[in-house]
Amino acid sequence: MSPLELWLWLNCSANWDDNPGHNPPLRRGDVLTTRRKLSRLARWTPSEIRAWLGKMERAGELRSRSVGRATVLTLTRFDADHSAQPAPNQRPTSAQPESAAIDTSDSPAPNKRPTSAQPAPATTEEERTKKDLSVGSDEPTRSAPYVDDRDRTWADPPKSGRVDGLSESFDRIWALWLRGQTLTPDMIRATERARAYRLIYKHLTNGTARASEVFEATRNYLDRFNSGRETFGCKRPPAFYRLQDPCFLEFVTETTPTGAPLITLDAFNGSERFALQCARQAALRLKVERPEFGDGEGWAEFLQLDAEIQRVAVQFATS
Image (cartoon, rainbow, N blue to C red; front, side, top):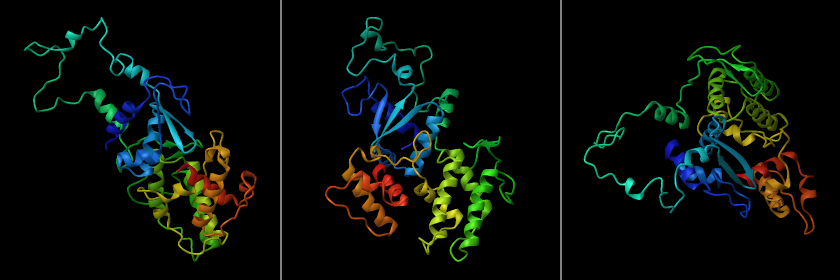
């Protein structure tokens, strides 16, 4: 499915009217879905869905909010795009007679598109829309320096050569790899710096992640080896930041809009039992001792678990 087709699907799936009785309440232009569903529908990877939604949100086309394990997408221009169109099964109004919708003339109407097999050239507006909705090509398209969420600039990566001094944010990220290589040289290797820069730059400009999230994911990942919790299998930087299904996204801590860690019961749809189930699954993934809970135990016991188990449990609940 192309980006344009996915955008049309969202418009067709959006609520036509407010639905306050729904749980959660939905307004006109809202679409209740999940990223996993969109990934299966469009046959994109989860990272591509996340990047496209981020691009559309920054362009002002939609807003998103999490509701338990689901996501509500609000199409911000739904009213403007559909106000002149009749609702489903609505008959034409008196201002637009039903017979006027049928063109019986032999000659084409003014401004009518050609009907021959050869399609009409795309208009400037159509070209702009398709460009805005696209996921992006493999080559960076920005000429001006990219400014990240920490107000630091990233220069366009050169096609070859060194990348020293191109970004203070990247230098801080790379310092984590150098520190890890010093602490655990048998496991962590700070290799292919230039390639890592190009991959991270691509993720930033595509909207896959913010610079602060890349830094946090790198720190969370390498701390597992620096602390001795992991003793083998450390990925090299290019593999960690790869474009297709990037590994680093698994190590980004979910946060609230204010930046606080999103470790709340709401993340588990308000179910303490579900939170404990996710904690057990998280322990299995982390290959640590699986926690056991009694019949009367719940959220208070969850909050006493290791922070890494809590973080991965939230990932299970919201994926």
